[in-house]
Image (cartoon, rainbow, N blue to C red; front, top):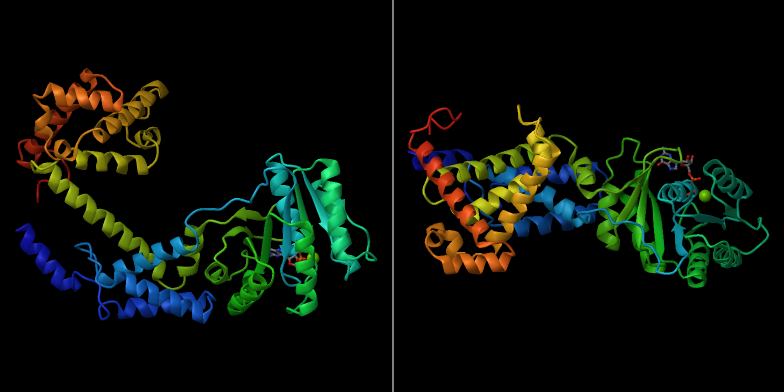
Length: 439
Ligand code: GDP
Ligand code: MG
């Protein structure tokens, strides 16, 4: 019956493979979301074409609509393209680490310089900020004021010295002071011009920075792509800071910057205050970018259904006799993914009272079990009964995993007991498990 139901379900929901036709609406939805998030048009086109090709012919998890699964693939790809995890600021082997800030005027370079210095100070790293924007006297004052506010020294030589020379002396000063990191704030123009780029290149060649961070105003929109291309071609950036994300922009610039330069966004600015700096997290940004319309809700739903479909398959297996050590390992990893065992058990009524000692033991046991399963051959994992009466196999597993034969023996007997208990449940001999009676 279950199989027939599944077939009917599939027909109802569409096909079991992703094809050009069954994802048309989803494609349209994703395109619209990316564009209204201000991702550059060309970047959108390329990205979607790539994901489409990747998804073509992918098996659809039963019970999930192909278009939903496609959107989930888009979301995962978006997270992957943006780097998956946060990339921290580089740190030179021998101090000082030199960070060069670049970007157009008004994007938030000076503010980001101070924010970054404060961020590092909180990590007990010492900083020197260098003011090289000699074109606007107010710019130097701005950095000096920020420096006083966050108690970080500022190196400046007024407006009469050449910026390259200021930067050079700034580094010398930093070495003399023995600080950990020097952050060089630079001048920007309202548009990209040869003079500005020339000066930046010269500063770069002089100070040999470990990081060149492009500061991009997230409200720049589509233009962020061209901007990034030019800066990256001319000076070579190692990362970016996306500012003004506290506004209502969707942050599509993040995708453009990353795709065009291949370099990670390292921080985001979320306000005018010096504390308003956060590490960049690709998954959060992907959610934000796709957050237009209903796309994100669809992602959540698809994820839920995919998880459910997985869980249902596992449940079926557990109840049948085919549950083996591989499934067991999978279950354990799932448990691990959900957070620490302690955190998980605290949510279960009546389990909160377990002492930390007991929890510790539980986690140790999980680790031990995983190690032992890892030392089994594929054949043994698939057929746990092989281990029931084979001391030589158990001995090999024990020495491979660093545990005793008795440990292996009790794992095998516990597993066998659990499996037969589950089988009994499957045959309805044990009642009381919710949702299992009516399968
Ligand atoms: P610079 O010309 O690149 O040095 O830009 P500034 O650091 O002087 O910043 C320009 C303006 O943007 C200032 O008014 C800042 O307060 C503001 N600003 C900078 N970063 C942020 C941010 O993350 N959020 C908001 N709302 N404003 C910011
Ligand atoms: Mg400035």
